[in-house]
Length: 399
Image 1: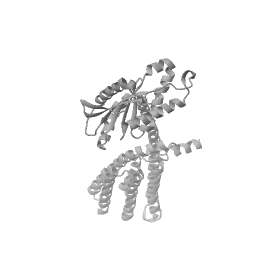
Image 2: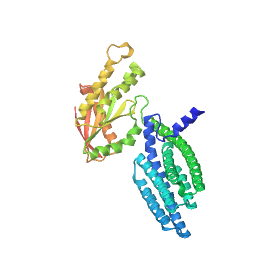
Image 3: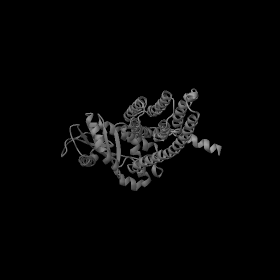
Image 4: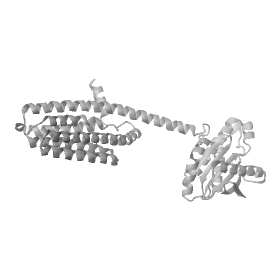
């Protein structure tokens, strides 16, 4: 029972403390906005109550001291309301809320010392002071600290001058503070527990959504991005490169005679080739773009490079190396000869073109590369074109 109670209190001691660092950072980010809203709500309620209190004091004929104190506290509440919308640091927001409550408590004590009595209005103010504490979504640590600060201000200032106040009033004050403080802390504890459970659920839900999004954008066989990802990110990626005044490239890569290889050596070897293409081009494309499996043995490359042909050649060299190091199909001692055809479109930064336009231009270049492969001795059959107009591509043989 005791251990369970300690564990429960430890759980709600802080609303941002979790076992995993990533979850704690997420909770910290979430609590900043929640605390800003809670602090704004608390200061707004305090402002309304203090304004009502000022009107009440004026109507009941209370002295100037009561009116002056209420007006100053109302101005402080208004200042906190504005500041809560501007601050972005969680600890600063906590301190701002604590300052408002402690200053209000101190003002009530000074008012009691000034008048020499605890009026019913002051008792109501003390009770309301504790009641607004749960409006801020802080953990038990912060709520306990501000509760003890308010309690200490009232207790120490009155015990040291007990002769100035009626004994019954002091005991009534202790009862009001103890009862209101315990109720407030109980509410904060409950709220913190519910809030932490909500943060955990939202964190897991968002992570699950991210994982599902990644899975829906990934090719299940090779792990490369799929066409859905290309369509979703093409515009933003190209726009970023255009703002950097850089020429970008769109290429279609196709493994030559893939079907005969697949039929001769089996589907497992065909799958191995497709996976090897992805692995081989990951490093050359790193920080320059990405590879997309369009379907079958066709891949799209969207990237920036001063020399795109060299980048493609580097990827192909890694492909041959990767396949040469792996076990060969059917017990062969030498890997089957692999070649690829590439059709590439280079797009200057001043040209606007859709992904569909680039695909059609690159597909035509790829068709030409495949048609000329028998005339080429290299393992990469490469045809490039420069897009100067979305409807017209000027093609030049680049290898």
